[in-house]
Image (tube, rainbow, N blue to C red):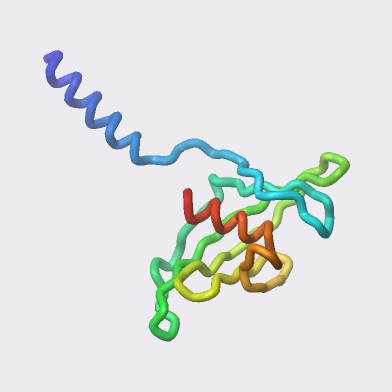
Length: 119
C-alpha cells in the first residue's frame, strides 16, 4: 500500500516538473519612446500553427502580451505576434506596427524574443 502511494506521488512529481505553472511578468526594458517599463506576461506566451515553412525556412508563430507601466503607474497592454525562425525574425503588434526584430533597432522586442525562446 505504501509502495503504491510513493509510486503515484513520484509519477505526479515527474509530471509537474515538466509543466511551467508559474505566471510571471518578466522585465524587458524601458521604452526609449515613452519611458514606460515593459514586461512580458509569461502566462500569455502561446505557440500556434506549429512549424511553418517559408521558402524552405522553418519558423514558428508566437503570441504574447506586453504589459507596460506608464510613468504615472497606469497599466497598458499590447498584443504581439512574433515570427521566429532561421531567417530574420519579425513581429507585429495590435497597433498594426510591423518590423524586423534587431537588438539595436527594436531592443524591447529583442528582449521579448529572448524571453519567448527561453520560456
